[in-house]
Length: 203
Image (cartoon, rainbow, N blue to C red; front, side, top):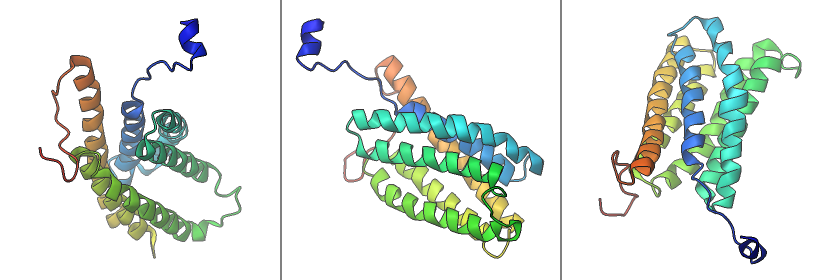
């Protein structure tokens, strides 16, 4: 073993993608049930610890390990969305301390989500090159960000926010499906849950 290490041997690394997607899915689900109005409005604050620790820190760690795996898409996506959740959690907690006046919060939130919609559009194009299930997930995520932006422009608009919440719930379910497929297919050593081909590949 010492000889292998001396020669630059790198031990195998488990795929960090299921962990990153699981963190993304659970946090998105918690955030979205609040936006959909399925729980009292104050409950939205319960997603903040998830945003900071699971959706944020855990996803960021998964992204860093994807750099080790030479996975550009995974490293960019997990690191960025981990930072998204940390930023959103901090804004929810400290927007007054940041000097953001409450009346301008909706406009700030709208442009915040527009910015993430632009980034997600880039990732959406790339996602179809991974497999169909990820392409579907990013399609739903892009729709969620667009709806969130629309909900806060000139608003907030509770009706659009509720729609964004329901689309976000479906997004979380799609991500959880990929998590289940990655974990179960790996454990059983065969395709139990299909993910579909990448764009341009035969099924």
